[in-house]
Length: 241
Image 1 (cartoon, rainbow, N blue to C red):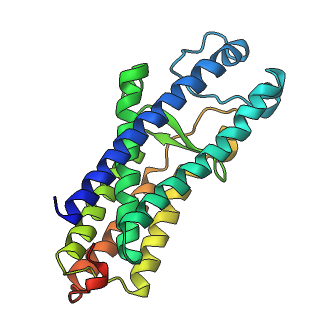
Image 2 (image 1 turned 60 degrees about the horizontal axis):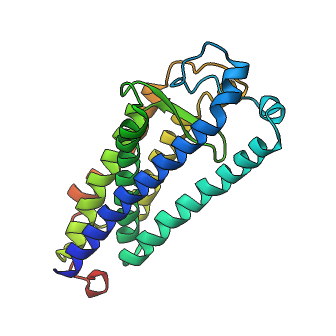
């Protein structure tokens, strides 16, 4: 098997396997927190994540729950480090690193929801709301939104890696990197738009789909410009695995 095929298989296997690990952790966390949630929100369905438990409610549940929350913050940070480390092992240069990270992240995220469906029969639909991240503030949104982002990341990542390994790398100029970063920040803003209300124990307000769409268009549009207008680079042996 050639080098690029091995790298691709490795990224896919890691993403799917890590998706299962993430789903298993969430299953444990929900089982641990459900008795406390039932205490404060009686009658709430076990599959309803919102409203979230507030800090004082976690404190009332015992010191171990606060420790779990602190551990969860650290686990999320470690997750990003792991994904970045895998991308570093596969990618050569900034563009390949970004592509490998996007593929691994996207496969991990989609696999996570697939395994959650198997383990917990959740989510009920792609419009079911989920708590996505806690760093630096709570991110939340319908499952469809992160799945769309992840699918886009996987597709773009494979195009970048495929072109690079074929000896025709996509040219990313400074403005392209700026555009990708701006699009990513807009997407994060869309997910964190209602964080104050959610962190205070409120039910989520309608998702900001226009802002989300702007972030997707900015990111994908920048990538399309890099491919179509920027052209492709010449063969660079340093980027060949």
